[in-house]
Length: 266
Ligand SMILES: Nc1ncnc2c1ncn2[C@@H]1O[C@H](COP(=O)(O)OP(=O)(O)OP(=O)(O)O)[C@@H](O)[C@H]1O
Ligand SMILES: [Mg+2]
Image (tube, rainbow, N blue to C red; front, side, top):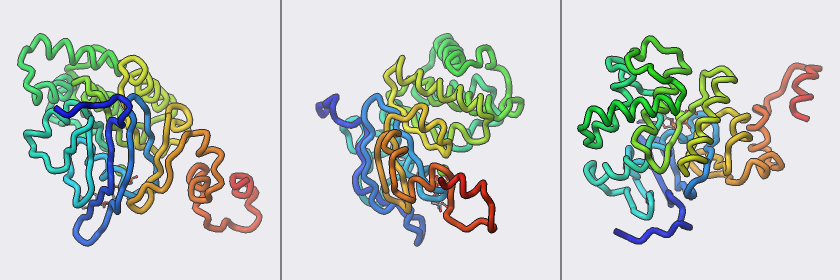
């Protein structure tokens, strides 16, 4: 085992390139994700955020460049070699990706069974604990189709954390949620960081969450990391791409005399 220095980033991405057919999606991404931080990944739709995230537990193989997790390069690993990496890095997919034919409890137990946990009593206890963490205690027997959108997100979150990974990747955990439920997801993410020292990587379009829970932000544009910094630095930035993104301004003209648009730009 290589020696791991705690000061080293937990995940280090260098020169990462990915393309599908002719379409270049990642064009040389460099990114460090530090141990125990909440890094939020921002950027326009279709810019490659989800594709980048899928490289971190080795769900996609780089066309070029490297991804190191906890000091080990994972780019050329086999599925078998990747199993321990996936124990360290849990992922909550953009669409939740619950198995509709399995109960909530079985969905959450899935990664434990994949890891080879056999003791049914232990599985039941860990599923119950994960449901407590996401504040859905006792919901094991419900089917995914019987849940609200916000509950599905929480179950997906429980499934991502049940194996107690060192790092969890969240792909738009706030999308489609009311502001109060979105806020409670933020509390959960921050609580996991503070109580379990978890490293969090969160893709979101929710600027309110960014300013609430991010330690650092990386802004992805056209397959490259365009900017990284703290929430304070983002707020203070004069860069038109960043400030336009924060207030949701495309730069396109509004009808004459629309005072609200002028006000938003100020
Ligand atoms: N498996 C795939 N095969 C072909 N093209 C893909 C695949 N996955 C992603 N893409 C393409 O890569 C581009 C980036 O997709 P990605 O899902 O990473 O965007 P995103 O930044 O997450 O956007 P959004 O904010 O809308 O979720 C898109 O044009 C998408 O169609
Ligand atoms: Mg996406």
